Amino acid sequence: MAGMTLEDKMTMLHGIPLFDKPYSASVAPLEKLGIPRINVSDGPQGWRHENEKHARTSTQFPSELSIAASWDEEATYKFGEAMG
Image (tube, helix red, strand yellow):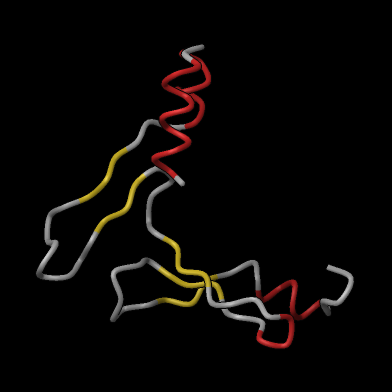
């Protein structure tokens, strides 16, 4: 953060639309700091394809709040592993 200008920090706060990719948007790269473009999906706990090969497929996960409210340590661990 110390090496970032105000403009660099503002750039990291919004996305760039990716109409030709299976992502919702992308955070702009900051090449001078070695930060690559970061692709993001359109859901907090899932990912959806829009291309022909994977049409109508998606992943679905419960929200972190519901996992925490379950008090199930094994389910929480498995959730974390699946999310990466």
